Length: 116
Image (cartoon, rainbow, N blue to C red; front, side, top):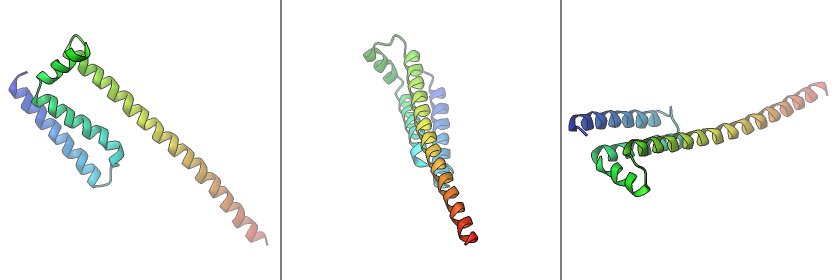
C-alpha cells in the first residue's frame, strides 16, 4: 500500500476516534455503545501501520484474499452491532412497559384519593 494512502487513512481514523471520544465526553454517546467503534478504530490503525498483518492473518485463517478477510471482519462487526442494539432495544421496551404500568397505577391511586 502507498505510504501516502496509509497516512491519509491514519489521519482520518485518528480524527474519527477524536470525534467519538469527544461525543463520549459531552455525554452524547454512551461508552458501552462506543467501545466497539473505538476497538474498530484501533484495529484499523494497527492494520494501517502494519498492512502485512492482514495478509498473514488471512493466510492463517485460510482465506484466499486479504480483501475478503476485511469483508469478513466488517460482516462480523455489523452482526455484533446489530445484536448489541437489539439487546438495548429489548431492554428499553421492557422498561417502557414497566414505566407505563407504574404510571397507570399511580394515576389510579391519585383518582381514588380524590374520590374519597
